[in-house]
Structure formats: C-alpha cells, structure tokens
Image (tube, rainbow, N blue to C red; front, top):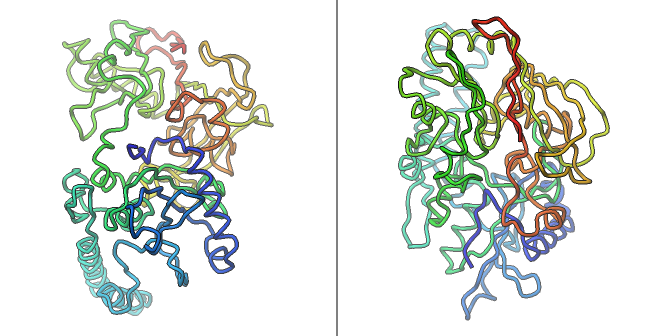
Length: 474
C-alpha cells in the first residue's frame, strides 16, 4: 500500500474507525479531555508492524487488528502521558535542562525590561529591541538545528537544510512540532511501515478558523510541506485538476479587442509564475498567445484552485487603467459557489476582516484586531453547476466581493462567524472527511475540485466608455 497524500486524501473506513477510537479514548481521560477540549489538531498513522516484537513496542496501539500511532500538534502544557499513548516530539523543547528554556529566559528578561520602557532612554530601548531580535533569531536557528527528520531511505536531514532545498528560507516558528512529521519520524525510527496518515480536530473551534470536532483536515502547508515532501518522497507535487499538457487548450479566450483580453482559467492552473518557474501559468501562456505584448498582462488573479474569468491588458496604459478600476472598485465581479449544506438565509452581506495565519500560510483568518476590511454580498440562486445538478445537501450561491482580499470568499463562506457553510472541495477551509463524501463521490480517491468559479465582470470599457459584461460560463 502506498502512503496517502496528507494534503489531498479520502479517509478510508478503517482510518475513521481508528479516529473514533482515539476520540473515545481521550474523552474518557479527564485530564486529556480538559486540555484538548480547548482545541487541538491530532494525527493518526496506520502502520504495518514487524512480525516479531511489535506488540510490546510502546506507543503502538491496536483497534481490532489495526496497528496505529497517535500524536498531537504543538505543545500541551501539563499533559501527563504515563501510559505513553502519544508519540514523543521529534525534539523536546520542554526539557528543563535544555538550552531552549535557558536562552528563552534571556529574551523574557529583555521583555520585562522593555515593559518599563517609559523610564528608559530611547537609545536603550532601541538597543534592547535589536538585542532581542538577534537573540530570537539565534535561538530559532539553534532550535531548528535540533530538529533532524528521517526519510524512508534512512537519511536524517536538518529542518533548516530541508527548507533551504525547498527555497523557503528560515522555517517559521513551530516548524517540526506538528502531528504528521512526528508520526512519520516515530514510524521510521522503529521499523514501522506507514500505511495511512490523517489529521483531525478535537474540541472547540477557534473563533478565526473553521474547525469541527472529529472532522479530518489536510496537514498544514507553511510549516509542514517541505518536511513531508522529504519524509514522503512519493508525495511529489499535488496533482492539479487539469493535466499540465492540456492547459494551453483549456485556457480559452472569451473576449478580445485592441486593448484587452479576457480568458477562462481552468481549476489547477496558476495565475502568475511561482517560485517553481517550470509550472505553467496564465501570464506566461498569454504571452505565448500574444508575443508582441511587453510587460505584465494580468490585472488581477484567481487562486490556483478557482476557475473562471481573468482580465488582461495588451499595453501599459490599458494595464494602468484596468488596474485602477480594481483599486477603486468601479467594476463588479460575480462568482458562483457550491456550498456544503443548506443555507437558511437567502441573501446578505458578510463583513469580516482578514489577515494571514502566520503559523500556517497561506491560510487566512478572521482578525478583528489587525485584519484588513473584507466585504462580500451573497445571494442564493437556482440552477446547475454547468451540466451537473446541485445536490440535495448543497446550496448554489452567487458571491459579489466588494473587496479583494486573499481567500476572501473561501473564508467568508467557511467561517463560523460567516456563512458557516464551506465551499465544496475546499481543502484549506473545509472538512476533508466523512460519510457524505463516501456517498457522493465513491469513485474518487480525493475530494472534488474547489467549487468556486469567477463567472463574470462588469465594467466601463476604458476607451469606448460602454458598460460591458464579460462572462465565463461553466
């Protein structure tokens, strides 16, 4: 059996049964339940054990005849695990004799001194902040130098080197402490063959994220993807919905005049070049179609998973004029989305400020303190998704973003303080599991594509001054 992709998977029955067993075990343990009830991501790894000695190996558990490991992400202060139920961290930062706690105290001392900055000279405040920054960076690097991950070939690599190979720079704080890398590390170090890996939520949902107790989610991207690609060599790149060889054909020109062009972008195609310059993208494909155009053409972007209409300019002046329309919000964009569940309200406005989750990029969160204004108008509509009927437990909506924040529509739909109905197929903000997908998509090994489509743009033509609506039909 080939280990599944932890970002794009369909939990099998055996995995869900084991997850239920873990949920039941934790709920029966008063201390664990009290700590995890506040909200924690857990992971389980089904493993194949050696013929001898496996039954006596600590931290290997059995549900019927299924062997599995359990881990939690991050740190749980005060957790007592006398029975060795959870796999240990790759590196234990809570060891009282460790360098981390000692050097962290030095940073804390500076913080305490800065707390009384009103009585300090500005030059000393500046010096203390610079010293704190230097100590923090040095401590972070030293922490990461102790996180050495093992791959199936038996090779250990430092997390700094893994991120450097992925051209990701210094890893973000908390890298290496998530459940998935912990599980794989323990399996490889104890001669256990990984079979199925999943992560699921225990407890209440944070106010700024969409999390449901007992539901499955993909591994985090910002902190884990380089590590998991190293630990699971078969992972490779996530397979897009549309094969790269067919992107040129799939990129349909739907409007073309002397000044601008509009195209239909398929789901899975990047809008603009990424760090991996070998990946196809709309910007490069447009320059292949219009080789005489110099400079950037696209005046806005769509998420890779989103399909639909993109507007591009054929010259610098048109690019400036169209870009100004987006900045000044003088055009109207309409999206179609299939939502999980039946939406009770027929229409309304969602106003939830958004910011990036620094610990799990590119996910965005509702942030009333530091977030940027994000407003969406929605209305429930009747119809089909192209040729496909809308299912009984889905809602078809039209979404009109009045601002253009990253992942705005996806977060506004999924957030418990938004519509609380995630877009179907949203692997960043929707649940990854359950029996519903077994029934609806029995032949698919992954969840369906993101059911979000940029259907139309209405604008005043920058030169003719006529109001035009350009549509990208499903």
